Image (cartoon, rainbow, N blue to C red; front, side, top):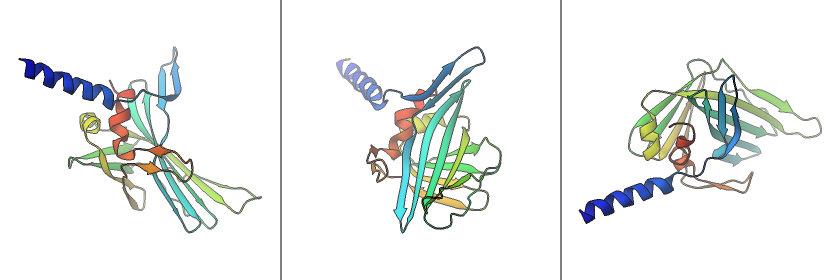
Length: 190
């Protein structure tokens, strides 16, 4: 009996410390509904040859509907081609347990915004979209780290190998992309 109690205690303690405190950039509850959005976390960064690419994830709970907000920012001193999302766009998350979780685009077609400042030779393209979780995908995300992110754009597919720890050249902060959902999914899903 003591062994069973010890095993249960260790299991509960492990689950308690796996979840971080939830930090929200937006947390609104009013007569119209509720909206919560977690702080954006850098999932991927690539800086090479005058071009920088950043992908951020944040989680949203919009009236009890959980969403993943993906934001891709590309900065370059040259031309930045558009990567568009349409109603067939998806994000595939390959987990370390071998399972694949699929998220579907909930927004209309978007190619992002191109911003070019006259006093700088740097162009920036920002693409933002919300993705819906398919039913039954939360349990795997709560327990298994991510190994690969595949983003299916309108005309191409991009694969990203997810790092265990990422030290950003942009913010000089460290994030843990492979454990993003383990640490944050409970902030928007009960």
